[in-house]
Image (tube, rainbow, N blue to C red; front, side, top):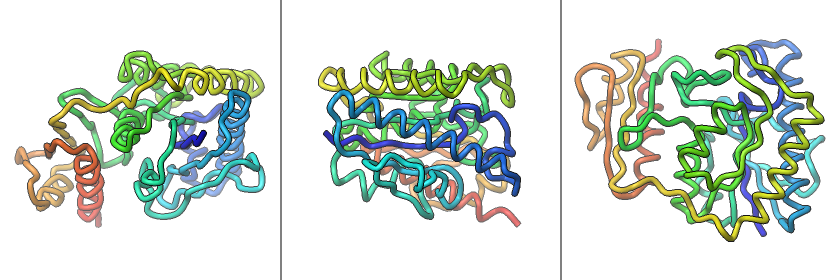
Length: 276
């Protein structure tokens, strides 16, 4: 059984501060990397107890996606890392997986969860699929589903776990490792308890895998991206087949979610070109 792991940093056990995300040179970032690595290892251990044997983690936090500590990772785990890697690397998804774990996830932009945002902290105000605000977790679930991979586990704060379970109609197991008090504060579980929750939920997710179907976005898929700056949206509006409202919002629609996802990434790269 092959398990794909999408690993982000904001939702890892204990992480609550921008200083822990690699935004400065302090030791806080190294601590956060260790905590994320421990969360991933706990998920692998639980999944192995339930019969999974092969694991590949997509390290998807930050611009260069180099967060998991290789020396400390479970020996059964391979890692996809490097630049540019957003959410999941499609070239690897095509190899085929039986299920997807979402480890260290955070809530969508504008939500009350810890370190909530979507893709780019300063540029993106909101992302919507078919009129519904979504975050990186829902986008990841939908991308995996487009490759016939069901998502079966999410870990992070209580807000993102609730959002993902709502998106999947309850089919995804959740392990809450901290409880959001604000965007920059949380009641964090002791690491030993958080890891035990992850391990138990991962085992349960693998045991239930045969009952879960890929959680696809309804088609046609309408993507709307609201940028925080008009100039960023104006730059991205040069993309073909993208509708622009003249202010801060772009939209793109297609039957194929993969094309919608690629349009989202292209919008983001184009918008970043507006920065000086």
